[in-house]
Image 1: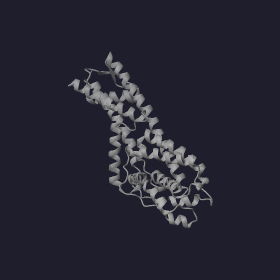
Image 2: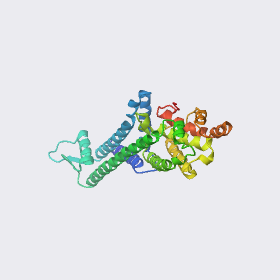
Image 3: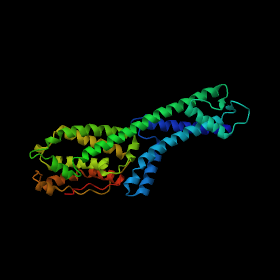
Image 4: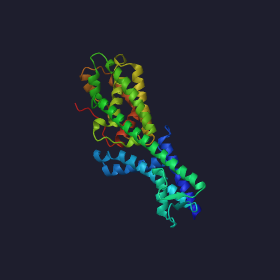
Amino acid sequence: METLYLLAGILLLVLCIIDFTWTTLWIDGGAGPITNRLSSSIWRLMRLIARKNSRLLSLAGPLVLSTTLLMWIVLLWVGWTFTFAGIEQSVSPSHGSDPVSWFDRFYFAGYLIFTLGNGDFSPLEGPVQIISIIATATGMLFITFGVTYLISILSAVTMKRSLAVSIHGLGESAEEIVRSAWNGEDYHDLNLLLASFSENLGSLAAQHAAYPVLHYYHAIDNTTAMPTAITVLDETLSIIKFAVPEKHHPNQLLLKEMRSSIDQYLDTLNQSFFKPSEEIPSLPDFHSLRNEGIPILLEKDYTLAYQQLETRRKKLLGGLEADSRPWPTDLK
């Protein structure tokens, strides 16, 4: 029986260390296998419970993060408890000679992991003392990397919402931004903004790849919602690139870099958070833009271009649906 306890303890510790290291240290690995399944399950449950309630759904991110941390603690703690239970007479009371119970082993393992000491119990002289040091080391590493992981995520969430606010500050729909950015001659005024947005979005995409829990941080207010902001921005660039004559475009390199950054962001999300929608979003209101004096290509030209954008726009709509948000439309 002790051998089974020891094997169970080692298995739990290995699972915990692999999942923890995978999630916190492997930048390109995304979430560990246990964390990924746990996060997805919590998100689906929260969407089922919250439905269209954004305030309730906004609890999903903090819940996923706290549950993940708790899961690691439980695996580490229980794993070391079973490990010490699997080693004959591994723990003895510092005073007295009462038999060691399961609760005593649980207490001893927790004391080693979180307080750097032995408490009222001490390890058996020999290999168990080395094992106790290893247990303490895993606890120190868990606390250090866990805090770093937590701070990194909260910083990324702040950056994500700040970028969304900046994009929404230009307009709540693609048509609105296209109208407001038109200076009467061209869209060169967008150059500085495109450079800034591209850099920030590239960093955000890398953070989403490194910390998949960011996918589950749902914003209550639409102005801080990144899925809506990305959709509005990409639709704005699509209108300018495929429906406005090229001589009026912003800097071509900046335009290409911005769309590449959006591609990178969408590909990061598409791996685990959402699937492209089966529906095709409606076309922008090109007639209202033409009525505003903005030069728009012939309908046959931009219609053909938008047929080639169907897969991309399905991804955008899929991201909105995963975040329980509608496709942004022009309210003018």
